[in-house]
Amino acid sequence: MGPGLFCAPLSALRLAPLPRPGASPHLRLQFQPRLPPLTSTLPRYHASMADAVEAAKRAAAKTAVANHYPENARWVGIGSGTTIVYVVEAIKALGVDTSNTRYVPTGYQSRQLIISAGLTAVEFDALPAGTVLDVAFDGADEVDDDLNCIKGGGACLFQEKLVAMQAKQFICVADSRKLQSRLLSKWKYVPIEVAPIAAYRVQKKLLELGAIDPVIRTNKDFKQGPLKTDQDFFLIDAPFPPLLTSADLAAGRDGSGKNGVWEVNLLAREIKQINGVLDVGIFSGLTGPQATAAGGVGGQRPVAAYFGMPDGLVSVRKAA
Ligand SMILES: O=C[C@H](O)[C@H](O)[C@H](O)COP(=O)(O)O
Image (tube, rainbow, N blue to C red; front, side, top):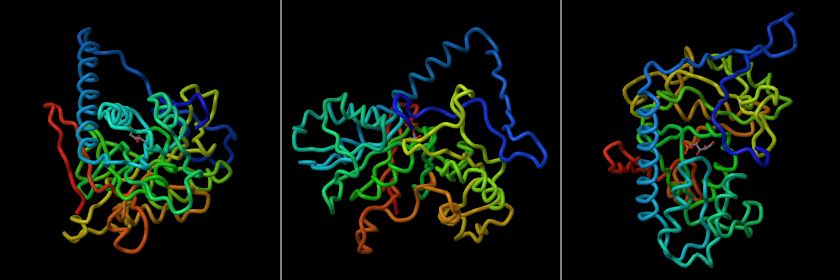
């Protein structure tokens, strides 16, 4: 995403998946009408809902930081989005000496957040060779029973995965809306970062995998064209039916892709293999400790996920 563009929600204007044979080369627009509120009390209702969601994010961040911010932290990964703002707020509120701590951003917004909090940012590619981060904090768009995550709804996923996979442990922070048994339950699509030149080809391959109307994400102002990531790449948002978990497979369900029904890890692998894909917004597989035990470094699946609940409490899920 270029400077000045923060992780932004999906535009209301979306591009059709592929030009039809013989059709104009210009991309077809699908307008999603914005309906007026039903009654005049709704705006106030929405405002209090929004306040409750922000309070839930803040509570989750505070608990996650209290439980996982390391003593004498040296390297800390900072994710992207709206929830991570509360993580940085909570780190500051700890009141610990941060003069020897370096914070590794996952994009433009993340770097600005670190700097504006008075903390010291070090870019991922400036880390001394062999550096392993003590911890990485980040948000998610959806988290399933196995703590697999969907990420990239705000256009950041590639650097987030790099940073998570370079950390001893990845801690996910979210509000209760994100907590679902299966990925793609409420959150409907997998964000995929692709080379612009390969975007149509990747769309076609995604359709072959069973994606339902994968679209190139645009800027809010359609005239500005496709939204660009921090890497100057495009994003394709690919809807699939809900992704199967380990419990589903244990119960005998088929997640091999038949009728577009996939198990989480399998779909992530299939998408990643498509030529032109930089990375996929499914964070699954090993946790940091599992990767370390296997002789590697880091893992993309969180060891713990913190959810701020509507009653003000925080629910913690730990990875098996
Ligand atoms: O693309 C953005 C990142 O993956 C975010 O971490 C994710 O979208 C969650 O963002 P938020 O905390 O704003 O819900």
